[in-house]
Length: 205
Image 1 (spheres, rainbow, N blue to C red):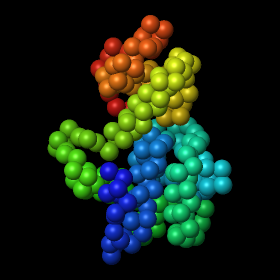
Image 2 (image 1 turned 90 degrees about the vertical axis):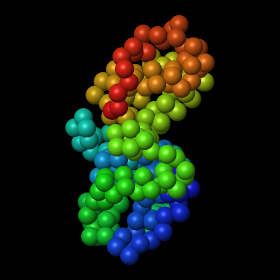
Image 3 (image 1 turned 180 degrees about the horizontal axis):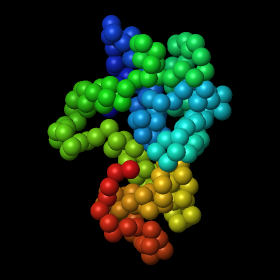
Image 4 (image 1 turned 135 degrees about the vertical axis):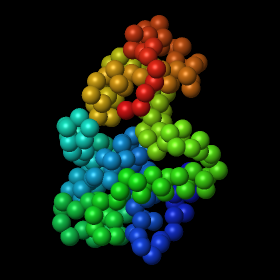
């Protein structure tokens, strides 16, 4: 899908959107942030020198620091070289009127990218949803940890804090989803970490 995102063309009413959207989607996929957290980023919240985002007073009303991979940070740097900000408290991703790009705009473009990538959509409420990118991030992190035989009971609180969850229980639900997608992997840790794999139905967060 990122190929479709990268092929976004400038349009008259939003000339910088083709620059912002590829970076927005790389942050969504590479960092597992909520779309609202990405579009609310201010210029002062993006530390390009150290590759760190500051998420301020999000869903849990707490600030948190998000490290960027080298590739995502470079995408932010490339974007920043083409944009001009008047003040530090301006939004990093600027709409044409220099306000925040709306979450609805990102969602509408997401639907177009799915279509361009040949990914079918089940209709309203059926997905794939934009928020599912966040779920994909969490599952991929857990998959990598399981493959590397990381102690999940020790790492889940870290992932929970990183994702801005209110409790480890909310993060642990991703283990059930990981078990459904990668059953062979999850068998490796069931004996020692079964207590963190919830039996409840999976819900988004």
